[in-house]
Length: 230
Length: 401
Ligand SMILES: Nc1ncnc2c1ncn2[C@@H]1O[C@H](COP(=O)(O)OP(=O)(O)OP(=O)(O)O)[C@@H](O)[C@H]1O
Ligand SMILES: [Mg+2]
Image 1 (cartoon, rainbow over the protein chains, first blue to last red):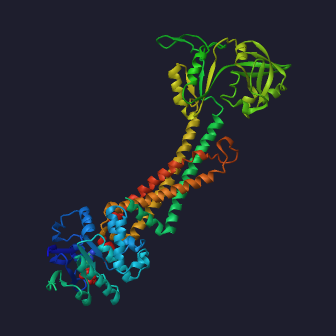
Image 2 (cartoon, rainbow over the protein chains, first blue to last red):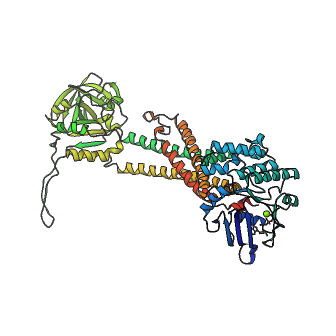
């Protein structure tokens, strides 16, 4: 297995002076391509902070981060935007979808924004992904009318649209009931096995974490436990 | 950026009520702009046609040479030659100049004339008269004489005279009757009244007579040449430039109507300035309206902007989405406002048929294209600030895990 990404001594401090909060305190982490890892830790441990940095949406205060052999710290906004589009998919807990667009339009956004238009090929892949997520009936549905579980499945489909190397999911099942949560996790597991997409999923839920082959613990701003690959 | 355009349109159609309100606001601004353009333009046209319409736009007049004055070194006048009473100056080679002048672009009509003073006598009645000899058939070239005719015809000819209403009444003269005209040079002609005009202008109706050029030649003993050439232009605003051209071409002293009309021009200018100020305010209102609406939209859509940025939408893409919204609002509002403005102006009488008591709106001067273009440009400028704000949304805080 090849290394997908590696961070060394990540430090993230929010605010300055008196109000400064040191969230990450020298965090080092390595993810191999094809892994499916859970990110665990108490609330406020810095899970979301780490995912945001790994997703190149925010830069750490200090430390190194390389993905696919590229330096993610030195890259500028334009380069990172293109990199995200091609290599990273996101699933957030809230505010995931564009409310004025249909499920299919949401799913193909990453491809359309790259091509400058919605291509027939993108529409085709979008349909396949939505069908795979069990949403064949909801393809042209306005996302505002979808249930929470359906929305998260649309978000997973969208995260997969550009066939990324890495999908970062921040409590993707946080506000779903158990059945819906397990359905989403099943789908993620399936994609991981079949397409080799790497997943890093933050969660408070031991049962969700148990579905992953690796568990990464974050406490006091560093990785505390890193069980061996299952 | 077809895709950015699609998103912009979707954002506008997602909230139809708000977009409709915004477009209406812009349309009202454009409507005011067009209404002001039509009013100011129509008013200027109206004033000009009332004051200048019947005047010659460019006049070439035979000038007596200025009397020579002999002045010695300390400034004493040694000798002066006074201007004579009788006319001596003529535009002797008018015939050669006429085709040249007629060929100047923008010249609609040229009327060579012989003018002079005289007395009309009929029985015991005597009236002073200012006589204009015109080329038969060109009586209405400058002043719309035929349009003012109330009896008979404007057509001049040998032995015929056309008089103003008041003058004909003073002399108790009716159509077909004869009157004696004696020129200031003492030459007399017996003429038949063939037409009576009424302009509403007392000086015209009470003291002007029109005869044919050949009658005038006899009366004023001018076998060749003319005393005056009047020129009508397609566009009276081109008088200055055209006069300069004619001067360069012929060496004659062509004087545009604007010479000596400074007060009128100043008044019209002030009126136009007022129009510009009002139109500028209309545009500023549009810009502020669009900017604030888009600013609000930027704020409301922060999470979505964050998502789009996370999914790989660049700053430029976000800017384009919001600027396009501004441009579309400007275009829609501009076209709507222009259409409404046009419809609102339709009931007003045309330029030719201004009725007293109504606003002299000129539907052809609504500057519709300009209004739409300025609105679109204004709306685009207005959207730049919100668009920049949108492109700088931090995805992390916007998505706000
Ligand atoms: N923008 C910010 N400014 C200041 N402090 C912040 C900011 N974002 C996060 N923090 C702080 O950083 C710490 C880590 O936050 P983070 O969201 O990464 O934790 P988390 O592990 O995701 O927690 P949770 O499980 O509750 O989602 C918290 O104490 C939080 O208050
Ligand atoms: Mg979190």
